[in-house]
Image (tube, rainbow, N blue to C red; front, side):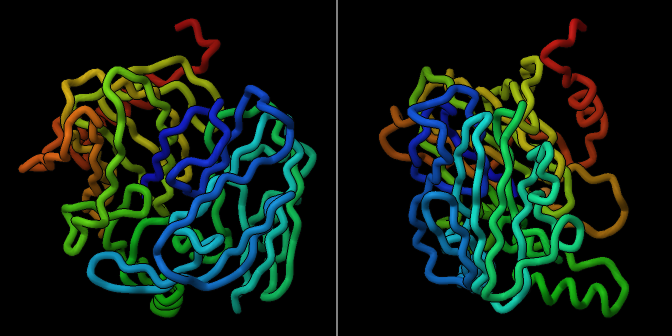
Length: 347
Ligand SMILES: [Cu+2]
């Protein structure tokens, strides 16, 4: 799944969408305390363990969610799919209490946090800690040092990573993992990639499950983009717009203006999107970059960028996005990767 959030780092209040982001703001706001941003979603009720973000408390649970014409239950944090957002400031001491209310073991991994002198708080089950058993709690304590931008967090035991965010399987992901181990074959491929949990209108029963981001013309927005798919690298683009990349994995990059980005599984990328087109509705899309000959999910997920100056959303009749590279475009992938430079680079 592509997780995308438009939010300025200096705006520390909650916004209308919440995904599994960890925002690290360089500029201190009122006080240096962890801030929990949350909002409600209306997707029904789930599986359950609790996450407590100091000083607030939250729950994580199983929930029933409908996508692609079918209902399934999946693991969610605080009943939200995609999961809630945590905003912290650089140098914050972060304290997060996770209480497991599901019947399975679980844990949360703080993906990309460098965990200086706190490696035991990283989260992967059986690697840096025992899993959190049903009914038990674990409090993660770490300091955010020398990082700013966007990171993400996710469940980190077995295939639970695909439960909290992930791409979309119609089947229960625990069952897919069990079959893979039983038969020794590769796992079934997913049924859809999603943008903010929504597969988009190219999939059946998904017109209502299509992400639409409203923007004003003539502004620059920071898009926090996360590839939360399980395995695949993804291309992402917005028609008629360029994507100036300024930060990857909570490290600033030399600004790079590109028609599309490639983003690896688990990677984060911030871009500064300028809404410089005539008012209208523009397609955003993601599809995998894969050259393997083994089976993989070769679908495309779409959403829309809608300029508020256009009174009603006029969905494009034909979904085409010329700046999204084709699935096997190794030359774009190579050129894009080679173009990324550190902020200090002189070349
Ligand atoms: Cu991770």
